[in-house]
Each structure stands twice: as C-alpha cells, then as structure tokens.
Length: 262
Image (cartoon, rainbow, N blue to C red; front, side, top):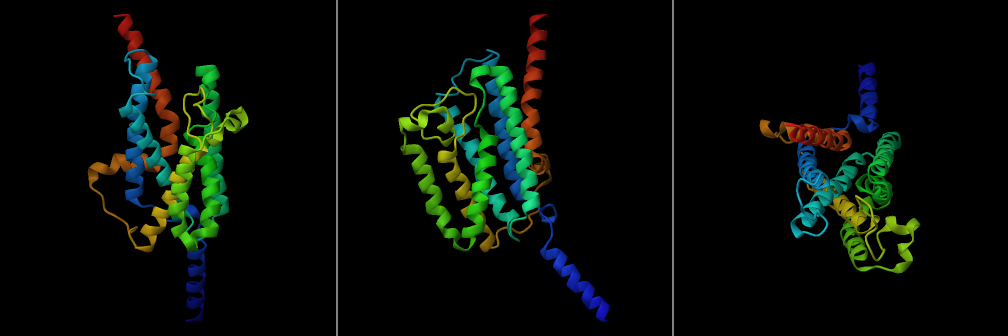
C-alpha cells in the first residue's frame, strides 16, 4: 500500500508542476481567436485589393473600415490578456513563456523585413505582433504581482486607453519613441499598433480572464461541429497570421496576371 501512496503523491506533484503545454485548452477561446483571424483575413483581402488597385476605398479614413480594424485588433489583444491569465494559473511557466515570446519576436522581425522589401520607407516597425510581444511581457509582470488584486486591472486598463487617446506631445514624435503611441501624428507605416492605448486593452483582457476564472466560467465547452474550422484556426493563429498574406497576395497576383492575358 505504501508504494501506491508514494506514487499518488508523485503524480500530484507532477500535475501541480505541469508545463504550460499540458494545460487544457478551452475550445471557446480558440473559437473566439478563430473568429478574429477570419475577420483579419477579410480585412487584408480588401487591403490587397486596394493595393492592387482593384478597389478604390480609403481603409485609413472610411469609418466602417477604421472601426472594423479596431474591432479586429481589440479582439486579438483582449484574448492575449485573457489567455495569459489561463497560462499563469499555476504560476509563470518561464520556459514556455520565453519560448512563445521568442516565436512572437521572430515573427515580428520577419514582418518588419518583409514590409521593408515591399513598402520601403513605410515598413512596419511596430505592428500587431510587435505590440503583442511587448505587451505580453508587461502584462505577465502585472499579472504576477497583482493577480490577487485583479480588480485593479479594470481601472488600470481604462486609464491606459484614455492616456493613449488623449495624451499627445511633440516630444514623442522622435523616431525612437513613436512605438509608445503618444506622438501628434500617425507615422508613415503600413501597420501601426502602438503601446498606448492598446496595452490597456490587454490589461482589460487580464481583468476579464480573472473574472471568468473566479466565477468558474471556464469549463470545457462542447461546441457545434461547424465551428471546428474556426477552433482549428484559433489553435494555429500565429502560423495563419504569417502565411495568409503571402497566400492572398500570391493568389491575387496570379488571378490578375491571368485576367490581363485572356
């Protein structure tokens, strides 16, 4: 009997120290991330049509497209904070966190290099992946020290959003500080998601994650079969993000080239 009891104790310890990759996934979170990815692909499809001069719409000024982009970015960033709470339920799994952070940083660098080759002076120096990489570090630190006082995340998130919207100063116009988001004009870049106000959305995601966890709203859900493609997309969001634009641009180029030669 004694060896069995020791075995059970060892099993319990292993469960308590399980790596991040062994923690359960929640299909609803993957579904929501998949929906955000789908909206992103739709937005970028129209972006590419504009780039190839098939459509003439102003994605930077027309209210519908500005709001649609804000919805997509907000969805991703809320889920970043939310998922971070789930990942840190048993404390900060440093190895797994740094592994994920490294992939994010590498992909952000590849986006910058690719955008430089395509757009030169309008390269992406602080887009969505750059923001997620930076905000993940800050949010992990905040969650580590304030998880017992998670109610503070609501006013803090709202304050960061208000700060990013209302505070602007020429001092932040210098190129080394433009990533903060407090400059007086939008810099010439193809994708700009500065630290402020968007860090505030990630912090709101921390608050939402703790609320759902404390109220036991994170039980495993059985979703309809037709949602499986979205759930799959949510599980592989970073890979899809990196591949979808080269695929869309390549397909459009082939179709337009073929149309011209008919």
